[in-house]
Every structure is written in C-alpha cells, then in structure tokens.
Length: 159
Image (cartoon, rainbow, N blue to C red; front, side):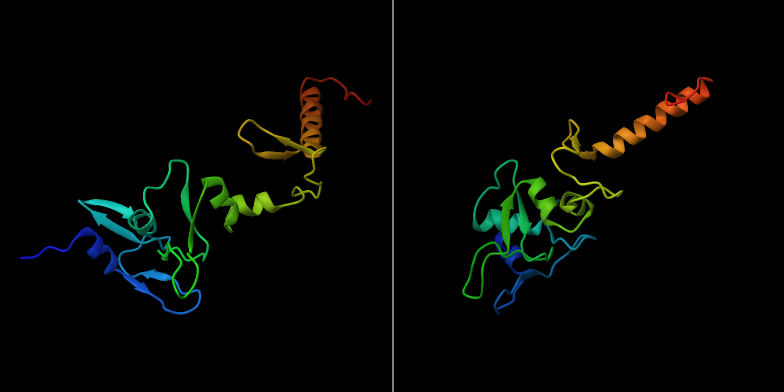
C-alpha cells in the first residue's frame, strides 16, 4: 500500500482557478471564518500558512500571511501565469488595519464619535497605543469632578 506524501495530500485539496486574478481555492475542511484547515499528525494547521511554508519557506516570527484577495480560503502564495500572488507577509497590526473589522474602521476614523478631530493636538495615546479624544476626556473628567463635589455636598467650582 502506497501512502501519499504530506505535500501531495495538501495540493489535492487545492483548486487552482486559471483566470486573471484567480485564487487557489482550498476545497478541504474550513473553519467557521472560512480559513482552510489541514491536518498533519493530528495537528490542525491553517492551509494558507502551510502553502506559504511549502512554496516559500518558514514564516518569520512576528509576521503572518495577509490575504490580498480578501478570500480566506485562498492559498495562492506565488505569482503564476494567471496573476499575482494573493498572500503577503505583514505584521499582525498591518493585517488588522488592512481588514474591514472594528480595529481597521477605528484606525481609519478621522474624528471621534462626538465629531472632534483625531489630530496631534486633540489625540491622546495610552500605553497600548489606543487613541482617545482629549476634548472628550476633559469633558468626562470635568463631569466626574462636578459629580463628586455634588455627592460630597460642596458647591460646583464655577458657582
């Protein structure tokens, strides 16, 4: 009995769409988010990461493949006669910011929810790099101080 190599088993689960900008579609098991899953020795691996490692080599620490085609089921790592590669190594932060999720939308916002600009004079960043509106923070702090004074029975500072 002949066993298939890991590489043969992997590529048997890929459908290469041969057209301009065509993805290499994973037709095996997928996660709930649409990412391909491949099992080696009982260990599940993301198919796009596996494809990168098979065709290019190890993924350097601190980097991850980003789907430029926005198709989580795509494993097209290299350019072929039908179009460019669909995966690019980027940092986790870059991958998040390129997406359409909350982090990306927040990062692209030019104003806070109350309409104040996120600019150098009105933006505060905490130790984790999150940004906040200084105008809103001052208003919140003033309201908190006023509330504490009212609870303590002191008249407001502006009276």
